[in-house]
Image 1 (tube, helix red, strand yellow):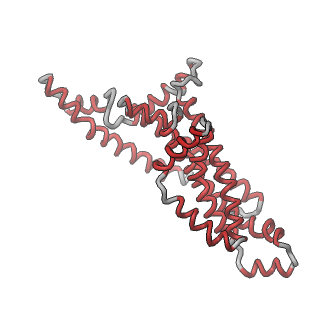
Image 2: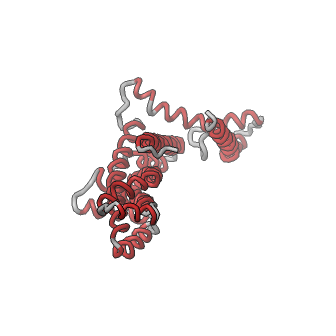
Image 3: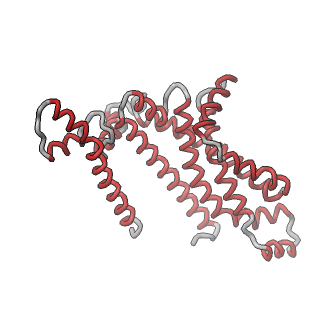
Length: 291
């Protein structure tokens, strides 16, 4: 309960600033329309108009909320929850790419981390390349991956999952390398006195010590995978998923549609990170490592 009040305070502050920004950014259009019609508007009328424009520069929070309800709950009540106009349909497309890419990135990151910890050549050669790979802007590389995979006949979910994996593997590599190297020399020497093999040292000392780092890196990785999936949707065709909704919204000046997709993606990211946090608490508690 103590953590809820700071969160609510920040959310309230954001909403207040958002409403103020909505008024500031939309009032010019309202005043221009009133000037052309030779109409004098009061402050209350200007405020009311800036909060209810069809194509505002910045939609108000309640407009975004109404759009999200109209494209989710209302469509479910009408029996159209899985239609192409529903955010549930587009959310599932983004989520499926995110989860597949996250799984690929996590498995690849763990294997690379183990190789880097146990092989000096990999430590000196792979790690610098892994770091360098993250300096390439995803907006530049995503269209190339989509085009190349289209040219070999691979379309749909896999190109987007690969881009998601590209962003999510790096936090896992860094976190696992740090975690696998967490045991100090005294602990490693103790395992040697027990005549433990390399495999036993890995499974009974290094891997358990890496779990807090592993779950922390997963939280970053799942959020990065979601960003990768959305960026990939901006480059792929047909336009589907949250990325597709944002792009079609920008084509037709539907800022409310853009913001509703953006907020839905943020809520999805929060849920995914929260789920991994839940797994972390359960796993560490069962391992006796909960703090």
